[in-house]
Structure formats: C-alpha cells, structure tokens
Picture (cartoon, rainbow, N blue to C red):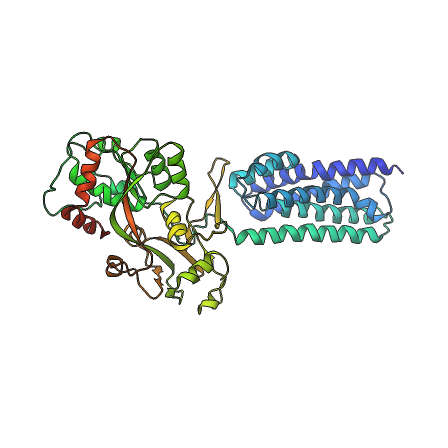
Amino acid sequence: MNIKRYYIVTFILAFIASPIVATVGIIAGGMTNIIYMRVFIMILLLCLMWFLWIKSCETPESASKLLLPIFEAYAYYMIIWVIMYGVSKYHFDSSLFSGIFQIATIPYFVINFMFAFGGDYNLFPAINSVITIVSIITIYLSCIVKKRKIKFDKSILVYALIFAFLSGTAIFQYYDRTTKVFSDDKNVQQVNDEVNLSEYQPFSSNNLLKNLNDNPTISISDNYPKLDGATAAYPVYGSIVQEIYKGLDENSVNDYVSCTKTAEAYTHLVNGNIDIFFGAQPSKQQLKMAESKGVKFELTPIAKEAFVFFVNKDNPIDNLTLEEIQDIYQKKLTNWSKLGGKNEKILPFQRPENSGSQTIMLAKVMNGKTLPTPLWEEYSSGMGEIISQTAAYRNYTSAIGYSFRYFATGMKPNSNIKMLNINGIAPSNQNIREKKYPFTVDVYAVTAGSKNPNTNKLIQWILTEQGQQFIETCGYIRH
C-alpha cells in the first residue's frame, strides 16, 4: 500500500481541512441560536470528512502510523498555543496573538477572528482537542466498519502521554490565568475610577459642586489659570473655579478647566499646557519626565487626605498593620486565615501605574519595597481590539483594594465595602487632621513655572482662612 500518500493526505486533512470544517460547523450551528448545535454540527462534519477519506484510501495496520499525522497536527497547534500563551503572560492584547499566533494557526483564521472580536482566545486548545479526539475516534471506527486490521503498539502510549502533557499544560495555564487576569464580569461589583465628570462641571446646572457661604475675597475675570488634575480632586478645584472665575459659562470654562486624571494631567503640566495640577505628589516616572524637559515642580500642600484600604463588608478583618499590608501586596501573606479571617485566598488589587493612588502606595506604604505584577483585566473593545489593563477592584469577599478616602466615600460611596483601620487607627476626620492615621497624605497644587500672574494669586487664596474653610466644605481636611 502507499503509506506516503496516506500520511500526506491525512496530515493535510488534520492540519488544514479539520480547522476549516470545524469553522464551517461552528458558523452553521450558530445560525440556530442553540449553542450545543455548534458542537454537534462541527462533530458531524468532521466525522463525515474522516469517514469518506478512510473509506476511499488504504490504511496502515499499525495504529501509531495510522494516527501519527493526527497527533502531529494536534501537537503543533498545542505547542504554538502553550508558547504564545506563556510568553505573552496570558495577555491576549499581546502582539504575539495578533501577529505570530494568527499566522502560525492560519487554518483557524475565522475562529481566531471570532476570538479576537470577543476578546478571549481561551477556547482554542479545547477546539483543537475536540477535533483531535473526534478525528481519532472516527478513523478507528471507520477502520472497524471497513473490517481493517489495526495493531496497537507502544508508540500509542507515547501519543497518549504527549496528548495528556500538552492538554494538562493548557489547563494549568488557563487556571493560572484566572488568578491573575479578570474578565469584564458585570455580576461582580467594582470600585474603579469611572465617574460621571459632567456632574462636577463648573457652571453647569444641577452640578454637585459646593458653594461658598459668603463672597470670595478674590475673583479672576481674565488670564484664567488653566487647571487639570486627579479625579478625586476635581470636585475641589471645580468648586473653586465656579466661585472665583468670573465671566465664564459651562462651555467656555472647558478652555481652562479639565480633568484628565493624574498621569495625563502631569504630562500636560510638564508640556506647559496647564498652569496648576491638583492631586497627589508626582511619581518617580513623572519626576524623570519633568527633569528630561528641564521642568521643576513646585508643590504647595492645600489639604490633607487619607489613603485608605478597603475590603468586602462581610470580611471579618477590621484592622491591618503596615507590615501586614506590605506582606499582602508582596504575596508573602496569601490567605485571610493567617490574619484571623476566612480561609480564602487574598486578591490584592492595585491601581494603574502613575495614577495618584499607585504613586502614594509605592511612596507611603511600600516604602521602597517593590510590588509584583498587578492583577489584570482584559475585554474586547467591540471592534476586534482587546484591551488589557490593571484590573479594577472587584468586591469579592477575599479582595482588598486602596484609594483616597474622599473618592471612596464622597464621589463613589459604596455600602458594600468597608475601610480598614491601620495599626488600630481609623481614617476619621480627627485622626487625619491630627495626622494620627498612618497614611495621612497631602493634596497638592503643583505648578511648573507658570507665567500667568493669576496662578499664584489663586493658590494663595486657597491657603487663606476662607480658602481652607472651603476645602473642608468640599470634603477634604484643611491643611
């Protein structure tokens, strides 16, 4: 018999035709809107393809030679998957998936396109395994129907071990990913920085900004300083603008006041696009960025704030020490039971790099100790692009996160989380005012050589008695 012909055609069917036939089955099954029909039609078409091929060709008696091209195709796709999955650190937004993986698995092009559109490739090894199992079973049964001899040898055991190893590796990777990368799960409450900033738009009707009890001692009617800052600081400088800036409305104020968040706002300050940044101290990267452009920051503390840690309200833990927090975030403490809580793995959520809260976490809490790679989240943009970013806090009973007190209690109050005491001290107004709370931090007005004469005028007013009273009216603690 012509073993070479059998091998070549069977390999082509396994490597190229099977993924295409599976794709057709999945698409055809999807037209029924019954999810199981996709699997059923895919299996049915694969069975038909292999039965017709085995019926029309001569097959080797040796089981290892009979199934060799099937296992080679399976092993190729699984090795590509395991390597790409591991090297990308489970991030589907990696260029490895959008480039090399797509090319290396081109017979799966349509399926991969659907995965990319949905933001999740995790079903790839499962589909490859199903195709392989269906192919093996169909070939074996077809030989029996055609009354052909099949002799099993020791090589089949090697195939089985390879299949088990590669499948087991893929399963392990998937499980490992679930502990590090989160999907956009709408069923779990999140605490993130998504705030409707229009509610704090100066001069807009029915906004949430605060008002002075009497007339301000200064006003600015031209040469308006341009302001930007952190989300948590926007209600403060937005309220100040509404009281001090004269001659503007909710549209024209956009030329002078914005809230692009800490990282982008510091970039605007360094580039000279704004006069004052409001928020936390700059990160090391932001200081380096300023130095590289010959810019020097001048930080003026205008208020006190608390950097707080919070957990699910049902978590029995009410207090943590500084050392315990450091150990949690360095993954030296990984289970709440070690701290007197439930037997649950701790999920320590972080914040994005160069955000105000992440800067304070590194500077005030970790005190130079490094943080491991944060938990990540991935989701589809809806146009085939996969977004990968630091995971927002998810309120699992085992989770812990951090933010500024004003943001967590004022802008986005949440009755399902509770703030922790640190070293036995609560982040209360009095403890912040007296700096007894360990993570009491300053809120700054940061400048970088502004030539606008009203910049210093505005900052000096904030430091007056009237300005400091207004800081407290806005929800912060006066400096």
